[in-house]
Amino acid sequence: MLGELEITSAGLGMFFLMAIIVTLGIIIIFKIRYKTYNLQSLLKANSGKRARCMADKTKFPEVDVFRISDSLFSYGLLVAVSMSLVAMNWTSYEKKVVVDFNDLKITEEVEIEVPRTNEPPPPPPPPPPPVIQEVPNTEVITEDQPVFENMEVTMETKIEAPVYVEKKAAPPPPPPPPPAAVEDEIFKVVEQMPRFPGCENKATEAEKSECAKAKMLEYIYSNLKYPIIAMENNIEGQVVLQFVVEADGSITDIRILRDIGGSCGEAAEYVIKGMNKMGQKWTPGKQRGRPVRVLFTLPVKFVMAK
View (cartoon, rainbow, N blue to C red):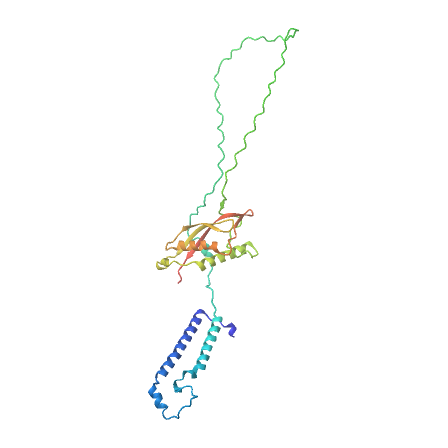
């Protein structure tokens, strides 16, 4: 059926090319045909005929191009309708991206350095242990003192009232200084790792994770352009990048941990930067139910088509 007709880009181009060729052929045929007529042959062919009346439109009907105007109009209408139908049934297919989760495995060991964050100062060291000094042996000279003291009280004895000295309470210790401001910590592993957007409608966390990996690979290999210099030098391999998924889902601090040359690292970095221009941001990682900054390592594989 006409509604189920599917025409590829190559078929559409061939149709337009054929229409142009047929139109040029018709023009060339009529041009050659009318060139065969000349004035002398037309006068000789019409010399034996009776005189034409004043109502005749042309003197020489053999070269009257208006006689075929209806046919040319019908041909042009046919071509226009055909081109419209073909254009409406033009079907374009998206480039099929083969997703392989093995591409997310780092083939060689890469040293991953976690960005440093401000840490609280260490506690002060404990006080040194007390030093025990040895007391030299000395002789204690005791004076002869009376064994009993006379405690007799008479009328002449003056008794002085004891003097009480008011002791002031010691001032409270000063409060400890406020802790220094600490930047948001960057985690490497969290309870819920960040995910590529577009899979939050899945039921379980495992399904969301698998869907996010597939969509991320599809996005990367749909937008990744193999550098010409790498193709000319048959450069293949795996580029490893590292970036931070912020608490709001944006991508920052993109670094190339391993490059294979031929501008492959720059091409992969350009694709990762483009994630900030998508309609949706990443789903941020969470630790104890709170969005946090997470360090994400991503390998990108460059393989030339065979």
